[in-house]
View (cartoon, rainbow, N blue to C red):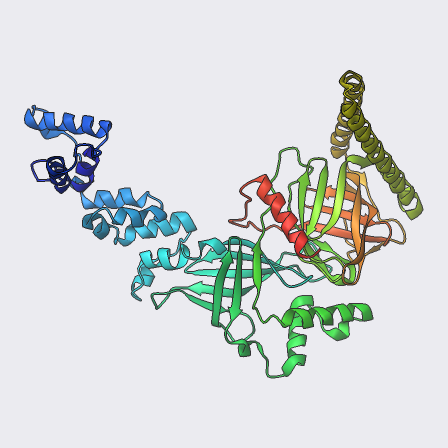
Length: 528
């Protein structure tokens, strides 16, 4: 009852309808009916009635028991602290609350604190659009599409970042810099935008093409998935036909003309990508991706990198750490290794000591070192599998005492080896080593670092066109600094240089480690 009194601002002297109804129920209702108040409410109400019956000298100075007794400007301040999702429920309490919640000051604060809208929202009021409309019909309605997404464009993938930008929600497609300038900043272009400027419902516009914004549509398919559709694809066409569209796309995508590209295979790959990607006309399905979680003991900060991939140009790779392994997953891909696949895997338990600079120039010497580590890894995996088989056999026989002693010795030996490897890794990380690519190794970028911190054994994924006959082949991972690493593909005699994408992406953190691992698994299954 006290709750009713506090919210309604009605006491016994004012005639609370809830109390009257309850009294009627006691007179007319059955004897076994449930009371309308709990013990705590009755205690508070009883205390209040006692005060009303015998008012003391301090009654005049008593704080108001009802929110309705507070000044409206104070209620505006209080309501402004509440999450915007709770305000509609608050408006149902009474007409006074509903009237106060129409104050734009409350919703202006919610737009700023929840979605980072720092622009002067008063400008919208001139057009008849309130801050409450902006919150409810734009920001809150489309909140589920904010963050990082990967479009389903066959093997090519992509990276879309949906953000609140002023009075708009904009989907920016991020593109790597032009090949082979891996250290250059990312490029980006808008694919769609949503705004609420002159009408009471949000407007979705397609930004694809060169004729300006035009009518589009967004549908939230399910959790962590949405689709876009252009309703006026004629805006994507150019007067010069497909040839002009291709040349324009080529300048934007590669920063050059077809005449500048002399490699015939590269020309075929470029033409194939244009034909494949342009057929979608910005009618795409997107699936959410998360940035990898980080730990204090990671070799370097995980995140997104742009890397060189030969004739395929620059591609976006996500580096993440998983215990003693590090994985590089493609966010953009190509017809050989599509987006979503694990392009490189680094074995952090097997560091490699590079030879002196003279022997490092010899590809055969570097290959010998890497293949020796590969054989060591193979033997360790075989011994581990045999040990597991033996332990399973002994467990089935119930000989637990014989199993216990050897396992302890193996664990101690493994811990000692691991500790020694970690110590050696930490020590080598403090000293820069000279680095040069062996003679015969192809690199798209000649301006690679000439010193490195440390190297590890790893494997790289290679496959034929159409992701046929995929296999993991040995290679070497080279850590240059906090923002760059490289990978030498032994079988291909090729070198890939990776540089960190230095963009602060919002709404991209994984809710848990399990959610991130599940996301990696899902995007890989899409192209398997």
